[in-house]
Length: 191
Image (cartoon, rainbow, N blue to C red; front, side, top):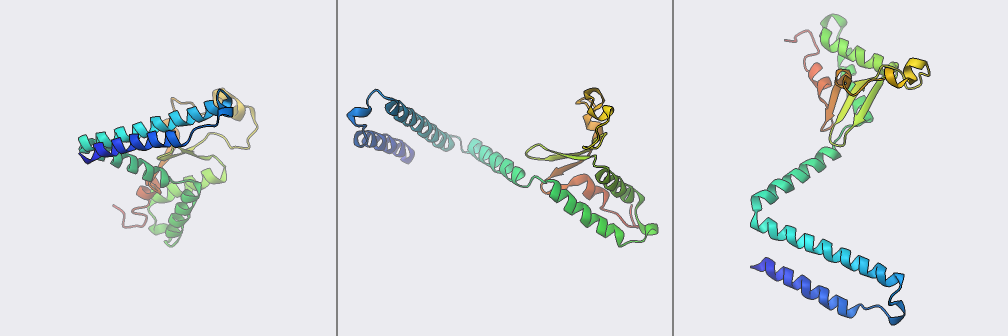
């Protein structure tokens, strides 16, 4: 098998490198030797792990394809995780689409949702919580700059148990999906 030859080549290469690169006698028993031994051991461990992964990918190709696909998918989700700028861009775009219609032709559900978002932004209560692969958008009880006792007290803040009630949108793959859902039929011809 060709893979086993790669493993033996790596072992031979490692042995040749250890023979060529030796520390001078003055560094024996010092911190430099310990540091060099640490990095050699680290390199040996990671090369063994890499060879083990390659061997296992040849022996179990379906499993390696599933892991590879999962890693690529997670990377792409993290790369396309929307932020505050993406939300504001989408909100402006949807608001501009809504403005083109007279109020009599606007879908009341879409209009109310946009007004609620604009009020939360104006009151500085809109928060975004990025969780790496997706973003939660929620409305807080108080403004960031509010210094009153209820805003500062830890017992009057949004708790973990009822946090889900405050979530108004989920951002994933450069989209905020509830905003997109609410604006799908924003004119009078909604269903």
